[in-house]
Length: 305
Image (cartoon, rainbow, N blue to C red; front, side, top):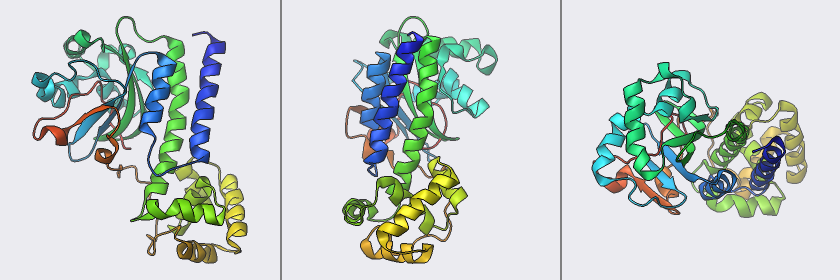
């Protein structure tokens, strides 16, 4: 992948994520991201998750015949997960940057563990993996994984993945903010359209109601405090108010906010949304589906979605 091709691919991703941000929903668009990754990398793709209670799962873009093998579920839930080079890498370093399995330094995982994991993956042509985590808070994580057989991913492909990753973080932050609150998902779209508010303005408004300052809101949504103030000015104008308290009051009356809002907002890095409600598309399997047997994963880095 030459530099020009890399730039074209990245521009496509900026347009793709930008369109979702401009027309947001409360759910993180897992299937759409898998479609984009499959197109960009021409390889197998999957979405991986794990929660604090030990539940975990994988949603594949396309089914891999025979994967995961029923007799290996316990292996992947225990030894395979702990030995996986990418799991070890993200756990030890706390890094969120995309990484390939072949580039994990030898000191992070033993040679035996590395070869053992590869041996279990090779029959399914999944032994080369590129992980793109977008939320991490050990033991919870959310990540997309690209897998292939043969040589490791090219440096240009890793560079593209590392440029895509911050876009996924931004998208995840907005979808999480919009998805908070009992019943808000059912009311927010119509109410926002009636008030003329964009999805980003609704996200700012929700953090404002939770007590967030311009700095805190900017941190939560990955934007500058100055940009937050611009959004607030637009919100006040559209709601016909001139201060925070009136904006929150009017927003509640319109159904944009829950009746009761927490007095403080803490970015929910340790509160992932329920993955079990988001595995309806594509090939997927979860620990809940297998009772006491845990699910096999293509890889697993630790963090939060």
